[in-house]
Image (cartoon, rainbow, N blue to C red; front, side, top):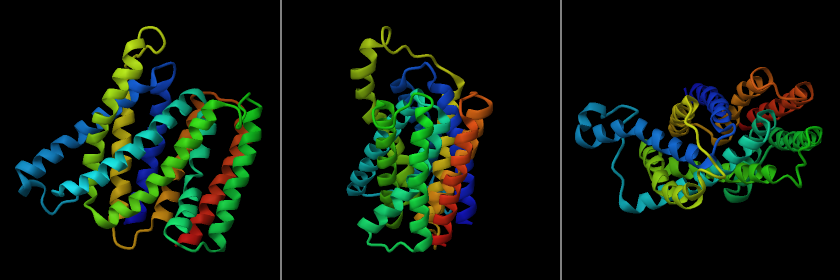
Length: 299
């Protein structure tokens, strides 16, 4: 069941990436990110209120939000900070880079999760996992070569560095999720970390975007912004649900979840009409092969 949830999460994550590209094209990043946090919180607000004021309605269901002590909220707040850094840098990257580059590179994140598990949790990688990590790194080098054909230097382009930060913080978030799901209520983590993001984002929005909104960063509301929040909420819900189930493995779930890149890649090829699709597609097959090796090694 947890593997099915992981694949469903991957589907919605791919649709999330497509809507993110649509919402960010020629649009201000910070208000899009802020609206995403607000809309995600609104999706979960009825569940939170029912869990508090009519607990029998959701009791013994997968949607019930348990009460957690104040000390737990500190750990959840840290999750919000990590996720916002990852989201913010990823939003900037996907706005300024082809989605056919951003998606596959983000898909290499499970390799960093495995390396992090090796360093932090003292886990041992087997042959398949090491091969998966090495193939992913080789694909990264090939993508850097493909990027040069579009004038994107992986070492001097600042948007690529934003993407690097997004991938690294995303891997940290994945490792932290393993800890949170082992110690705290799944729904409490997802609902409260989503709500806390509003408080974190609001001062950032008012300080860095609002004063120059009419000059440097005009904002236009688009329906795809609702799609961003909707598909992200569904993807995260299924992701956390998968991690909370007995015998689920973060290494497998993180790999499976990134298979949603196929959707964003196809959108980049047929909808956004991006360049060098054949070369990128061949390298994408290498990324998928790396993910399959990681899956084999983590079963």
